[in-house]
Image (cartoon, rainbow, N blue to C red; front, top):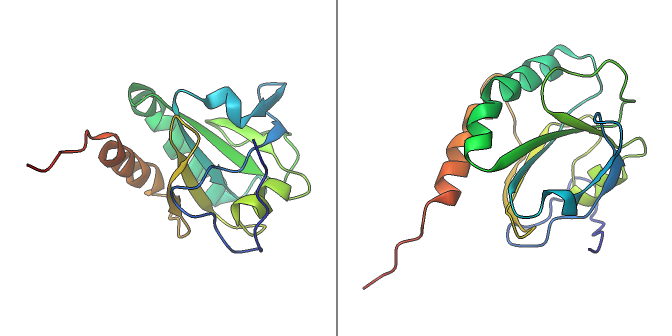
Length: 153
């Protein structure tokens, strides 16, 4: 896959291929976008650990992981911080130089979320995130995106 570099603060558009990555993870090995093909992916960027919002956001995602699983969806957080004692919850990636954040248009220290479909295309971009309610908001949108489309006529 090609890594698309966008100006800082510019998000890739819905319908475009998601920018590729190959980054260290909290699982002890690098993860790539291709590792998630065939399923949905929620990729969320968050500020460095251990900010209170990070913990709240990660815990909300953690609470909802069984529901995400039923929707064939993995949740992965991305931070520029080292993967020391992590936020609780989902798998994490470290983006130490901010390259993936730049590719997705997520400024350093921002909270942004991207829903990627099983074919690797961006389906939704969230640029305003409330850590308390964001996981539920993402679940609502995922359910809408996964609804079979009705044909006219």
